Image (cartoon, rainbow, N blue to C red; front, side, top):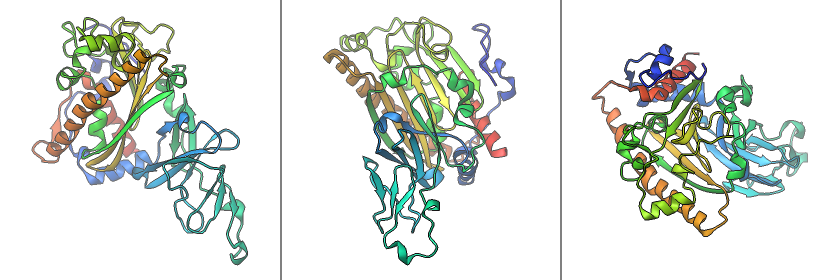
Length: 405
């Protein structure tokens, strides 16, 4: 499925994708433990998952650990002596202990704290304590268990399937290619990150970042007026495009936004929500402002199953929703900026960070749990989607397709 251009303002997005239908969707997949287990086995254990960026391990010997409850494992990601990124199950070959206990660090080798079996950065087993007492040991076959790993535009992806059916590039497909060349690496010199556990299904969280229909109302006290305008009060998108299993969204800005003095100062030096507002992003990859709209604000790459990457003219942010249970999710969010060169730029970045954390994330997070509590009540069995919520319907259909494969 490829991007399809909307013919005019009277044409509905769903008209471009009639195969998705327009009927209500069932609530059961958002509350069912049985459905959750199917998602674990048929989606998260099978597809490529974004777990970080190369800036987390810039030098040889750097590592970080990513615990993946949904895959029932812990992943150790290292920068090897060869300069390449490697990934392994964080498990000793002797008695199964975790190799790396810290969330990140730097070392020349990994030594198990239980019995001091030691592994090189490439995962090979280098030392067995009192080796002569073991029976028929072949160290060449007892290294750390590798995990498929790939890097796209600095984003590190892993796949816990021992034999992935697609390469990372094949999996990201046309959607990923449409963002090739965006200066992720140049921008990602400053990162603000948060994580919080919310009592909601992971799809409740992801759905909020597959539409901007809620911005005018939920975010009316934080960022809503920066986007919704008198001519576009409900923030209809510039583009909604589907690339199975991923999707893309492009969002307008309110060029006539009447900023307060503090907001005007922050805006002047670039804030995330409206980086260089009103610029058409000429020279950027085709996924960035694909409609070349003068009132463009940001574009999003919804990478199936659980990550959204939003890019603007001078910064980007990511959201990842990691399932913990049918009604619990670990929500991770990161904002990336270029290194500030002046105090004014630093102020703008801090303003954007605080606006996002104290405003947008708090508002969204509160909605997630309230929504989940009522979905679980059983008072209603289905919900209805507008034309602007096309990406939610598409994501639902993609999950359905994987589960029925």
